[in-house]
Each structure stands twice: as structure tokens, then as C-alpha cells.
Amino acid sequence: MSEKRLNNDDRSALLPRAVGRVVDALTLVSIGALTFFGLWASPADVVQGDAQRIMYLHVPAAWAAYVAFGITTLASLLWLWPRTRSAVWDRVAGASAEIGLIFTGLTLLLGSLWGRPVWGVWWAWDARLVSTAVLFFLYLGYLAIRAVPAEPIVRARRSAITAVIVFIDVPIVHFSVNWWRTLHQKATVFNPELNPEIHGVMALTLWIGVVAFTLLYVSLMNRRYQLAYLEEGLEETALDAAILQRSGGVK
Amino acid sequence: MTDAGFVIASWVITALVLGGYVLRIALRTAVARGEKTLFRPDAPDAPKAPMSENGVHQ
Image (tube, rainbow over all chains, first blue to last red; front, top):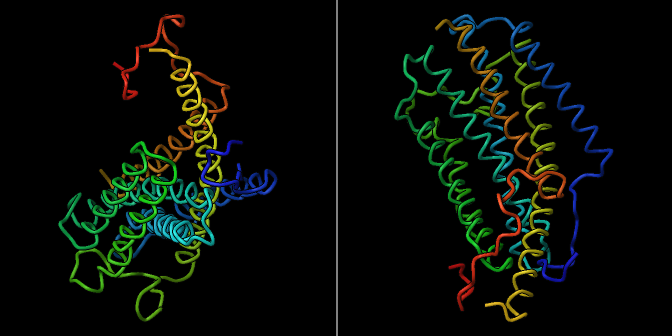
């Protein structure tokens, strides 16, 4: 498109159109299946009753946030390493961080909705909850840094360094329930013993949720990446027009 | 609110948040492609604000 892009890698979409459509269709089917199993097919929990069904959204949303921030970090490292540096990784990092932020916000909202009937409070100053809220604000800050006007290469470098630093909070969030005594329950599936404490239809529903949210993440990434590419082109066009206007002697 | 109420609220909020985000991406993509204009100036022929020496609009 233009030589002003970070390099010549002008990949405008992450997935081929046909693959993108298949992913979209699978996402819708899996979300439908999650709704059916989560609201009807899965039995109510013996202790928490129906309130436990919120887990089928809360845990997959947290999982999708982990995946999104992991991809942001990986893409940032690939951008920082000179041999793999590409504008594609910068766009992937930015797009994935934004989607991760949405999933983190959703995790906090759903956790609050689950906490009220089970704990009796909307919020508690608990290690898992606080570290997740910190995660939300760290990535909000990362996106703010990305929005600061700068040369594309300068913006990409400082964004990549920031992404690597803020990722430190992700393992803190995950292991917080093991490192500190918390009100939040311990990991149900990925616990230190790797012994899932959920079985049967309930486990199946949780896995359907994880698959659905992973597919949703891929679908959103495909769209958000394309938007980042288009908006980058618009920024360049506006910059070219401004330079032309100034060089034309306009005061 | 009953447990079922909290469950329904969680599904509705998830749909609103994710649906809203999908819509936002779709609208911004349409605008970036020039297919849709969200806001138009009242007077399209109005002169633009002059620029100072450092390129900042005055």
C-alpha cells in the first residue's frame, strides 16, 4: 500500500475469507450449544444451585482473556526480535490486547454476578479479584500507550515493551488462589494436581464454553486485525494529505 | 433476585457486551472502508482551521 508502513508486509486479513466464514459459523454453533447445555442440559450444582451456571461463561471468558494476552505478548516478542519484525505482529498485539480487555471486563462483571448469590457480596478485596482488576487496568494503560501519536516504529516498539512487562500479572492472577488464602475458589480444571474437580455433563458444558470462547476470540481477532489494517491506511492517507497541504504553502 | 435471575442476567450481559463489541468493530470497519459516515460536518465547505508552525491546529 505505502512505503510508510513498518515494512512491506501488507497482510490485510489474518484468515482467508472462506476460513473466516467457517470459524464464524462454528462460533455461532458452539455458542448455541453452550447456551443449551449451560441453561438446560447441565444439572444444577448440589451446593450452589443454579447460580453455578454462571461458571460456564465466567471461566471461558477468563480463559479467552489469558489466550488474548498470551498472543499479545508472543506477537510483541516477535516484533521485538529483529529477524521476525513485521507490522503484522504489531497489529496482532494491539488487536488481541483490546479483545483481551473486553474478556477481562466480562470476567469481572460475571464474577460479580456470581459472587452476589454465592458469597453475598458483589465484590471482595480478594487476591484473585484484585489481581484481575489490576490486569484490566494494566491493559487499559497498554491501549492508552498505543493511542499516543508517534512514528509507527516508535509506537510499535514502546507498545511491544509495555506488553511484555504487563503480562507479568497474568500468572499472578492464575496462581493467586494457590499463593494466597482467598475467598475465590481454587482452580477447577488447571489446578496444581491437574485433577479436574468437575465431571460428567458439567465438565462437558465447561469444555464447550472454552471451545466457544476460543472460537469467538479467533473470529473477533480476524475482524479486529482487518480494522487495524484499514485504519492504519487511513492514518497514512491523512498524514500524506497534511504534508501535501503544508508543502503547498498553506499557512 | 433469585439464582435463576442472576444466571439470566449473566447471559444477557455477555450477549450485550460481546454483541456491542462486534457491532463497534463492524461500524468502524464500514467507516474505514468509506462505506458509512457516522458524522458529517454541518457545513462541508467550511474552511479548515489554520495550522501553526509546529503543525498544531490553532
